[in-house]
Structures are given as structure tokens and as C-alpha cells.
Length: 302
Ligand SMILES: C[S@@+](CC[C@H](N)C(=O)[O-])C[C@H]1O[C@@H](n2cnc3c(N)ncnc32)[C@H](O)[C@@H]1O
Image (cartoon, rainbow, N blue to C red; front, top):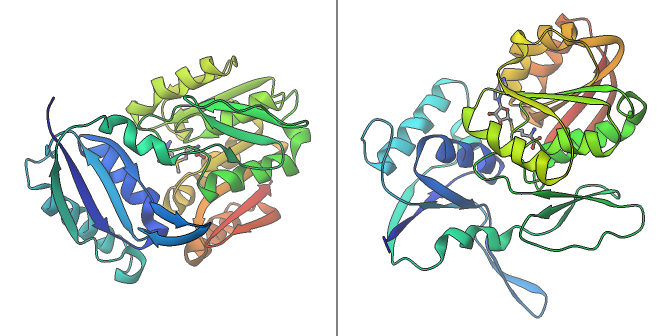
């Protein structure tokens, strides 16, 4: 058995998912642990919050550079794109070579059954869960895709969906940036007639398709971006970074029916002005604002 590597990156905890995505997209990454906690008598005695632990099969990087140098270069790119030092954290790295055990399963140990709302429960595909009355379950294996249901931005999108279920049940739904397919599958389980999802990351398409299959629902998932879509929908969810939301807002407006609603998520509170600007420029109305610190989401319509 080959050895493996544990890469520790010191980050601002708010950036956990973004840094995890960078690792999945660029490194030979098997999984990440966002936070490890140790408990004694129900009290947390230790937490690794603020240090992302990344499991690497090899030390390959896209440009052949050292893994830690590569991570630092990615941080510099984000600094150039307007993120501040405080928003990002130091991104100081430490790398450990580890003897192989059954490490490919290790990151999964920390992902548990997640109650996204009173009704929607996400169950890792390797766990069993007996739904309580009124609940429905989604069995998921996100592989390398974003969308385990544990992230507030995903949860906020579901909150928006539940607030406007009349636009979902028996209706046409789009999921722009579907990742693991989690929101599409939830929409289908809620009774959507047709669900379309696209993502610009080629590695997530098969993951989303397999997740749909696992949950016995049919969704159309394809590699692509909103500008290539030529249908209209009653409900659109878009859980994507604020600057992408800014760029695609005209597309979202084009894709939504006159009486449809769009659930916009992925917006950090301190970046909300960028999205609010796009909402105003595109003459969209805010119907609801939902918060889960430090994230905010908007449900908008024409
Ligand atoms: C934060 S994840 C959301 C995943 C899932 N929908 C959820 O809510 O958990 C954002 C997803 O959008 C995709 N993405 C980023 N920019 C995109 C774009 N311009 N068009 C389509 N997908 C995009 C990423 O690859 C990623 O899978």
C-alpha cells in the first residue's frame, strides 16, 4: 500500500469550502476534513476549526510546483481578485507523510446525517437512517463535488425552495452549479416535474447523475453554464460564489418565467453589495432575505 499525505492549511473558517474546492480541483485529493472535534463528557475539549486537513494520494500539482507553494500561489490569485488577508487567513501549510491505513474512508467518518430543514434529511450513502414522520431522506455520495448538505449556502437554498414550494411542485426547476446534485434531487423529491442542472466542473457531472440514480429520481445534468441554457423555469436555484452570481444575473433573469422565483445563495454577508447591485441592475425584486451567519441568500423575481 502506498503512503499518503496530510496537508494542513491554516485558513479563515469562512473560507473552508472555497479552499476545499481548490484542493479537489487541483490536487490529487481524496477528501478534506473541515473540522475535527474531540469531546469529553459532552463537552468539546479540542477543535481544529481554522485548519483544513486535506488527504492527498500524491504530491502532484498542475504546474509541477511544491504543494505548499501551489496553495500559496492560489491565495495570491484570490488576493489579486479582491479578497483581503483577514477574509482568507494565512494559508500557512504543513505537510505530513503518513503510512497508509484505510485512510480513503477516514474523511467520511466525520460526515454524519444532516437535517437540512424539518423535512429534508441528507444521509451519507454508507449510513442508515430511519426517517421520522414528515421527513424525507436523500442518500448522497458527493465524491469530489461540493454539496453534502452541511454547508449553510446549500441549506439557505433549500429554505428558499421551501418558502416557494408552489413554484417547485409539478413545475420546472433549474439548478445552476448543481455540484453533487443535492438541490436538484431535493426539488425532485418535493415533486418537481422536470429538473435541469448544469455545472462548469466536468468532474461533478457523473457524481450528480449517480446521486440522482441512487435516489430514484430523474434529472437532466450536463456540463455547462447558464448562458448556454435556452429554456424557462418556474424556480431556479443558484448557489455559486458572489462574483459568478453577479456575472450570470442577466442569464438568470432570461431563464426565469415571469411568475417564477430565483433562490440566490453562496453570498458572504460582506460581499452582498455586489449581488444586490446585480439584482438592482437587472431590475429584479427581492421577495425574501434569509440569513445563516455569515451567509445571506435572496429569493428574487422579475
Ligand atoms: C457552492 S457549489 C454548490 C453545489 C450545490 N448546488 C449545493 O448547493 O450544495 C457551486 C457549484 O457551482 C459550480 N460553478 C461555478 N461557477 C459556475 C458557472 N459559471 N456555471 C456553472 N457552474 C458553476 C461549481 O463547480 C460548483 O459545483
